[in-house]
Length: 342
Image (tube, rainbow, N blue to C red; front, side):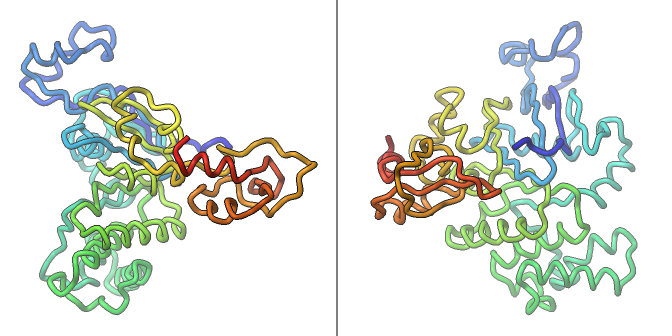
C-alpha cells in the first residue's frame, strides 16, 4: 500500500558549525561533493550532512543514531530552532527557510508540538496551568483554553492531577504533562527528542505504551528521536539511521533488519529479537489448498504475538490482508526459523 503524500521533507540539508561555514559551498557544483576531509581542512564541523528525508502524514518517523550522530540537530533544523547552513525544508508545501522569524514563531505556536528529554515544566503553574500555557500565548480566552487543556490532560490519564504542581508528580507523570502541553495546540506535526530516555526502564516502557495509545487516537505526524533501536522498532513506521551527521539508511524496521545498508546499520540489528520485527506476511508461504487451516492471522501481525499459537498447531494458519483475503499461509516451521534466528 502506498504511503500518504509527505507533509514534511528536507532535501540536501546541511548544518555546519564554524566560522564562515557557508563558504565551503562556494564554487561547488553539488553539496553532495563536500567531504569530511574538506570540512576538516576548513576547521568546520558537519553536524548534519546532505540530509534528505520525507515524512508522510500520519507517520511515526524515527531518527536514530549514537550520541553525536546529528539526530537532535537535524530535528531542530526541521523546526528551524537551528538555522540550516543550506538545503530546503518543506512543510505543508511551503519552504520553511523562506519564512521570517515572526512567521516561524506562528507556525511553531499553531502547527508544531515539541517534547524534549527535559520536561521544562513551569514549577509555579499547576498541571492545568502548564498544559494551558501555549493556548494562553495564542491569546485564547481562559475558559476555552482550560476546557481544551482538560481534554488533553484526560487523554494522557492525568485528570485527577490537574491541580498538582510539577514537584508533586513522578517523572513519568511530569513527562505526560509535557506531552499534554505539546498536544494542546492540536499540532499538525509532533517533534519528540528522546522524550523517554531520562525515565526508569519500567516507566519508559509504560510511556511507550501510552505514546502508542495516544497515537492510535490522534494519528499525528510524528518525528521522534532516539538512540535506542528497540524503542525505535517498537514505535516506528520507518526509521532513518544517522552516523557522523549523514543519513545512512531509511526504511521500515523489517527492511533495516533484512537488508542493512552497511555494517554500521547491521550492528544495530545484531542482538535484536527478529520475532519482534518480522510480520506474518514477510515469512508466509503461498497458500496450499490441499492443507486444512488451523486458523487465520492478519498479515501485519508480528511473529512474536502469534508464535506460541502457531507452533502448537499441527496445521498452517491462513494469512489474511486488511480486506480479509487469504494472501498466504504460515506454518510452524517458518515461525520456528524466526524464533531461532534462521
